[in-house]
Each structure stands twice: as structure tokens, then as C-alpha cells.
Length: 71
Image (tube, rainbow, N blue to C red):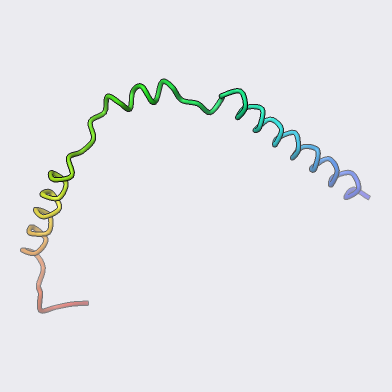
């Protein structure tokens, strides 16, 4: 008997939530113009610098590694 009430109520609540999501999507609630304007000011890392750092880490790790012993 309670399933006859709970199933329609849950379906209605789900449809209301879905409608609210589409309303927010249509009215620009998920746009982030302020974030876009701030992200343009953040410098992107130089790929060459990243490769050098990775090479330095590999050399540093090789000093502590015993090449004859593998797990």
C-alpha cells in the first residue's frame, strides 16, 4: 500500500529535480565568466621546463635505486 504512494511521489520529485536542472542550464546558472577571466591570467607551465624537472627526478631516483634488485 505504501509503495502505491511512494513510487509516484519519488517520480514526481525526480521530474521536478530534472526540470530544475534544465531550467538552471537554460538560464546560464552554470556559466563562469569570472573564472574564465581569471584563468587567462594564470601562466601555463612551459613543457620544456616540465621535461627538465622530470629528467632531474629520474636522475635523483636512479641514485637511490639498486638496479640489480627488482621486486
